[in-house]
Length: 124
Image (cartoon, rainbow, N blue to C red; front, top):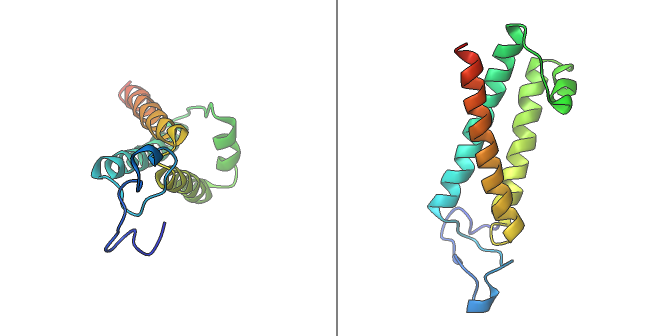
């Protein structure tokens, strides 16, 4: 991230052809930002559906989320949002690293499947 990331950015790619992998840039492609927003939106859906299912007598399978829920609903929502938000920021900044790209796509696929699971439970 730099002061150029939001207004007047300068660099979309590496300076030389062979340096793209691992290079840091100031500007990000619309597709990348759409993917990050998709994951963030699905994180919100997951948070909402988790709380709804627990209110209906469901059980939380994720032991980390279960521990976070013990501190209260508001704390759970804020903590989950911050953790995922920071993770998405780190993956976005490192977008030219293969493992970061894989992490973004893995998160998008996992949250999409998880949202489908929540919807299936929601309408049962």
